Length: 430
Image (cartoon, rainbow, N blue to C red; front, top):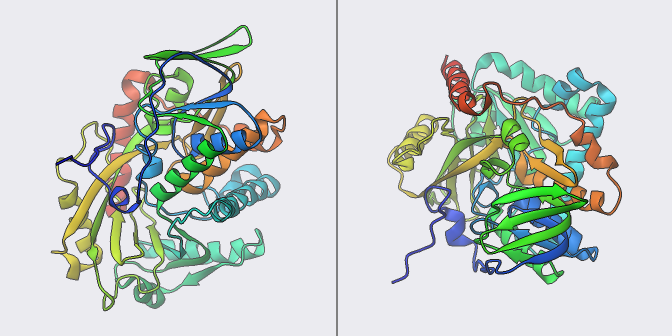
């Protein structure tokens, strides 16, 4: 009997892996290659860039250290959201209305692009509409009410409505939250199906995809970029680094600005038609700094995430921690069977905004989506392809965001982040 594949970089086997259908394997690189663009990283960003570049006739090589989707792209919560990670009015306070509106509109275009790409390429991503954003403290409710009003009046987004406590309880099937918003202009997807489908599109367009091929070094000199691997060197005119939380020591600038944090998800058995949990099928995110996010799958399972882990070691039993959080919101589910428990790493930045930078000549790094990557990362791959074609204007909107490095340097930044985020987690409970 063959054991099911287990990602060497992410704990647990996900429900996505058992429901995505066939997951094609791609060969490891064996020998030297020359191309126009080399991409390091086989998640949403890299695969989207490869697909758009190959369709434009660019000779592109993509390498992935493990299997495509082994990182966050194939294992995340599947929620799209709306706008950037920060609320649009927060962006306005920092950048002014014009720039905040441009960033919001870009994110909305990213959402439309994801839907259009999936439809045009016949990728069934299990899309389900609707997202609820809910306040876990009573004092936050007015902020949600104001947010719904501002989205319509200042940013032209008419799909968000305010929910009082009674409507929130009805739509959640839980009385643990005090109000929030309902967004009918977004929804949630099966992320691994999108990974698999995007890879197929890229390969069919002529992109050369290689799994089990880690990069052992990136050098830019004399107008060329050389990416070394255990069994060959790729020489290219340009390089995209798209490893997000899994960069390690690959390249120091990205590593200083993007920090990996662990996040974990559990999937229950199907709850059945009589369940009062999320009767409308929406996804949910809450107001905690250490956010909880959950949704129902198309077959009625509760997919519940939220135990972010800032320590180095993964929890020994994801199921125990996830069930405890489920029971807080849904006491009737305190003994529910959890069929899958899995984790992975999310790339965050200090201000929770994406990191895009030319880290050495002809080498651009993208990541730090900070929990908002399902929508943005796919679109950023498209923006990178636009840049290669000669139009960098739209990418510059993101490149120009000021993203400071994490304090403490390489040795102290992880302990400092652990202390800071543990403090925020404590505040969530007070």
